Length: 297
Image (cartoon, rainbow, N blue to C red; front, side, top):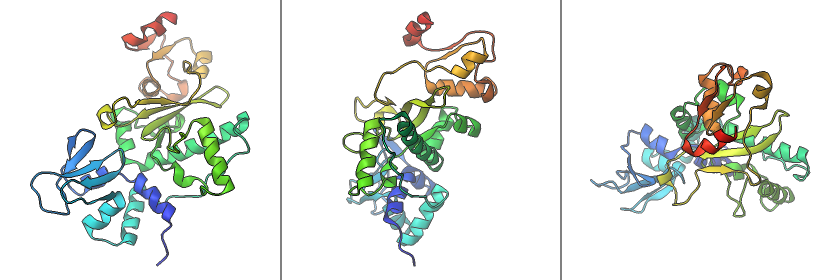
């Protein structure tokens, strides 16, 4: 039997939702803070002591001490081999992950190199979106579950698997790639992904270049440490986002409070190719805190 690639295993541990798998097994999950509790499958009990963490995609039982990843859970709860568990997780993702390392660019100091690296990472996030049950559920909740919309706005999902697509850490390419990602703000000094757990939306200008990236955490605020931001951006100046193509082609302006609402507007108000603005009246999708922006407009 062929040896399983360790990088693929690590990718699957992040890409397949433990919570979704437990639900498929018919387990009753009870929300408790940022975790979900259920009866431990590894010892007899009447009060749930098994905690599942959607954020970390790990489990831990406060009763018997069992803990591990989604791979460990599948092997132990269904009493199957590592190879069968691997095949099951691949089926959940939809295909065996393609894990060719992302190549570094010549330099991120130049616009062409910066754009090339941003495009590589965003393409990975777009693939990840389709393999994440929880990200798909979030799209449904926010009214964004439309294939044309997702493709047009290049929506993606960051689930901590970027590191498994980088060249080996100790190689020259690996060092260079990690430095470049940190320079762009896609990873932090700790090496963790900046947009982990976020729906990712690139802000693309009329020239096709990525000027900014917006990330929205998909879990409720109570799932995170106090003070954790739910809205993330790349470092640098934050400006308003304008649909430049629509401004040139239409007389109507649709003012939205966020990129997500703007994407929904594209779906709700007609063809995406008409770029939101086929009405003759000014439509304001904003809250009181946005009034200053309305006044400036």
